[in-house]
Amino acid sequence: MTSPAADAARAAAKVLAADLGPALPAQVEAALHAALHASEDEQQRPSRYDPTAIAGVGIGAASLIVTVAQLAWSILAGRRDHVAEPSHDAITREVRITLREQDAPLPPGSDRITEVVVTEVIRLAGRSE
Image (cartoon, rainbow, N blue to C red; front, side):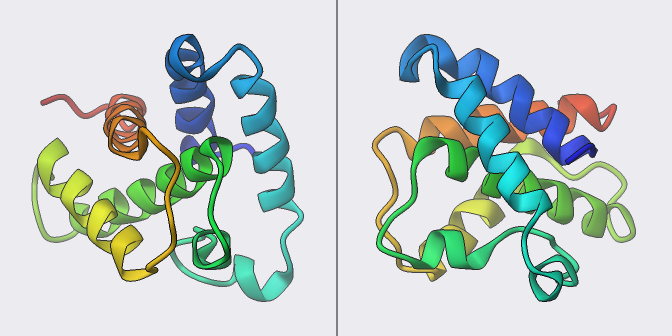
């Protein structure tokens, strides 16, 4: 998956590897590969995030990183049409609300993961706080 969301997921994995383990970047690559090869129906969703990944029994850190990156990118792209500068807090809040609506158990540290991923999405989108 070569997209701004994928690049943000990769960058976030590098940042978070110190806390979550050195294998995290490879795990994120595997999750990105899985997302790339998702069924055509899933890829037709405008947000391109995988709700089934968060609606299952749980979600691992790598899958959460990819899901948050795709969701945050979708939110950022959608808000550009309505808001000149979507804030980090607004995007983070919307991501967290969406994840909570899925009612799936999230891994420990999911708030930090969300913060870092949203920061990377905004950075790669050329936005600043």
